Image (cartoon, rainbow, N blue to C red; front, top):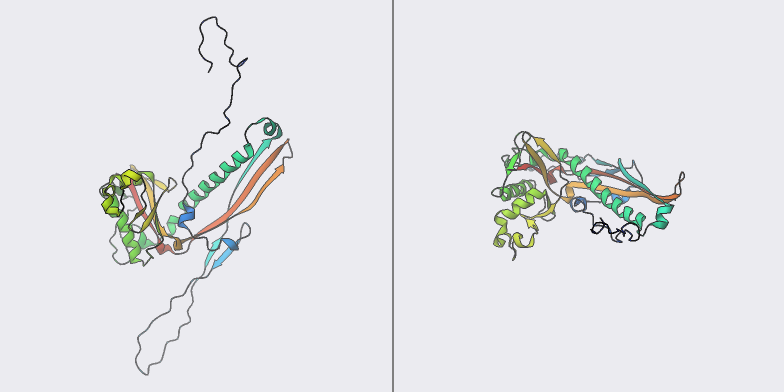
Length: 306
């Protein structure tokens, strides 16, 4: 917009006064991704191309029996079913920079677009995995009767989600800890993913008292949630949601890295000359797959903000 001028005074904007484009690009904000923190990549080095299949061997359970002198022994042949990790998903990007734009632009557009493609790829893959894994969680790690031993922990069900507020949010997260304790999940390496609204409830809860977290500074002052009941807490806006009655419900997830395996590979990233125009094309292909390998190491709290 040109600088205001009085009536009859010439305005040179766009003629003798040029328009200037900033050499800096306005910062773009991306959804936080968590896949690298919640999944193991033990088999990533074994995939080479789209469609590969990795056979994962599992440890059998050996039976223990009572013994009395002189009895005939029962001999077992330990065996266990394997798990297949299928690399059956692919995502790509492809964009072109015209030669004229390359010469005339004062910004490295290919580098700029490539950086954005990398971030967008992480977001799309994270969202796909988070939306695909929850149906495979162990039955005793979800629902109104969760708990392998107790069978009485209510983590919410379709039609009856949990209404979370600042007075009960800590209790429900501790319930998730009990679910994992009953499944004998290792205490070290547990994780928890919270949507923004649940993180805000935590900061309004009793955790604002630093003495409850064992920290010298409360979460109200430093904004970090850190660890809660042995869970390392991550925030994400990519958790699956559902409309349940009058409420939008989030599938809050907790787990351990042993529960989920993920493998991915950029099969090809290349720059080539465009055939139908004067320009350079940059494109990349990422293939990946994921599998819930230990359902008992993953849990869901089906909840909404009260």
